[in-house]
Length: 66
Image (cartoon, rainbow, N blue to C red):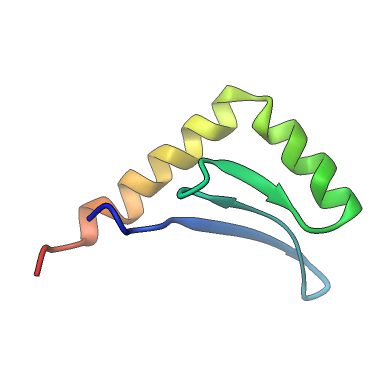
């Protein structure tokens, strides 16, 4: 179960702006605006905590070990 990754991407006009990756434990920006948004969210512990909780809610509760 350690290999499970939760990714939440934000898009605008079909272009990925920024995303949260649970394997990195932070937001990453892909455009100038996205870098600013990622920096803002990474400096706010409530955003990081919420994304980690989303991983638990969406991934860990719905996976069975094979």
